[in-house]
Amino acid sequence: MSFKWIAVGIVTLVYLYNLLLKIVRMRSAKNPIPANVADVYDEETYRKWRAYHAEKSRFAVAADTAAYLIELALLVFNVYAAFAGLFPKTDLLQLFAVLLLSGAAELLKLPFVWHDTMRIEGKYGFNTTKPATFWGDQIKSFLIELILMTGVGAVLMWLHRALGDWLILAFAGLMTVLVLVIAFLYPVLGRIFNKFESLEEGELRAKLSGLLEKNGYRVRDIKVMDASRRSTKSNAYFTGFGKLKTIVLYDTLVKSMSTDEICAVFAHELGHGLHRDTLKRQILTFVQMVVLGVLAWLTLRTADVFASFGFTGVNYGFALILIMSVEFALIAPLFELLSNYISRKAEYRTDAHAVSEGYGTDLISALKKLARENYAELAPSPLLVRLEYTHPPISARIEAIEKAANG
Picture 1: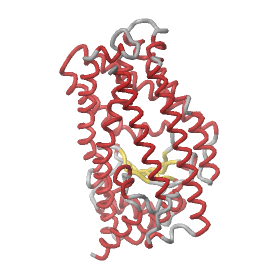
Picture 2: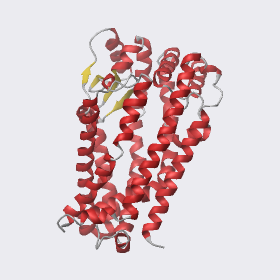
Picture 3: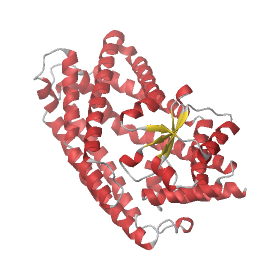
Picture 4: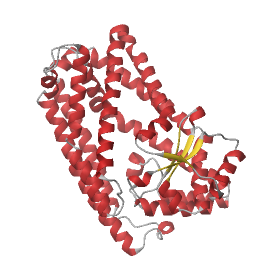
């Protein structure tokens, strides 16, 4: 069987798997709501949530189908090789040409992104993104991805030529370093898309600083991000390493919650830092990078792979596309299963930390507000939780918080 049709089969299998998950998600909307979260939505809001959930789910199926057909056409009709043929026959330009086409193909999906963001999210009162912000985000994302992927492709080409079979460990090591550097610099890189301001002095900052001091934990700053430029939804997160460690609060969260509720969310995020959850995740990242290194080695040593798609020799840009979008996509659900399990365990642990700080009741109140503001699904399918959820369902978290508070 041609390598092309193996790739087409994998792409189709991945599409059908994701379609199955979306069908399970749609059916989850009919599940009965657990008693401990029955007060999250009133009757009118619950009807609105069901309409939102149904519309988002149907549209996600349409968007995924369009993306699948675009990817299929590019592979089946050797479009990558034909486009690369328009460029000079130097390896670096051939690499760039393929990645440029891949980025341009993403532009074909923009009508779906626009409709989801500006129409559906706007219809239900979540979107606050202005058209200029939306298009600015898309341009920035396109350029960043093109530059990053071209750099990775160039490194892959150099390593393959210089090291041959030692490519596996070298590529895995360099990719891991790249991921760590991006994570380390995220507090700086995030400014490309958002504005971050230090949390102003006052009762809230004093309480949050007290939590940090009590736990002997130091961060570069407590930042408030202008999330309201794009959405009414709320969140908070911990990011960075070393001297760049930062805790970020969405401005929507600061505006919608009480001081103690924000402290509860902050204590949860502080728990991630104390337990080094971000650093621990990098172990799994390294394993993933080793797998990518193996796939790169297997792909680059098989010339017939490239001939199947119309290339006359190795194209390192197309190799990246095959490795990441086809080959790794087939086994990615296995990594996600493990990664999501570890993440959910970490969420329970950091919720327990908030309880130990005396914020159990406030955390429950904050979680319910977050669920209401973000239109969270209150009774997802257990199968969906295992396969996709990085956080436990809110009802399970509340049950665990109450148990920790009483235990």
